[in-house]
Image (cartoon, rainbow, N blue to C red):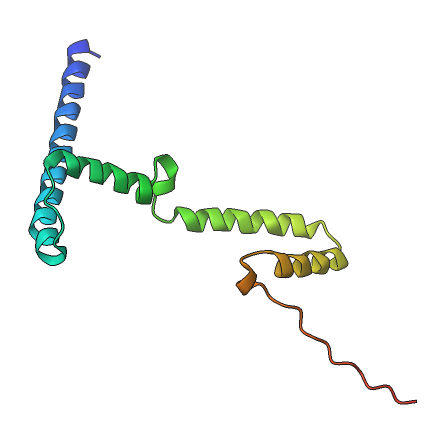
Length: 126
């Protein structure tokens, strides 16, 4: 392909990406300066502070790379479930039950752990 074609295409991409970032920053800044000072007595922010806020929210909530795709957690959970099922398939039923009991008593925060049900003492008749 022609070298000038790729250069023109790259410049168009850069231009539109810059315009998108500028438009998103301007819209976010306008909404912030319209709502936050009135509702919460917060400060008005500049355009550069707005871009910093957008980058911060992307880092905190969107992640980078694969982490930001919709449905990614459900895919990861499904992969994890299949991996655990394949590992459990190699255990004997006694080993599986022992593993389940250990997981119930040791995983998660202490207030959410399942306690073993107290077995009532059986009455023995002599």
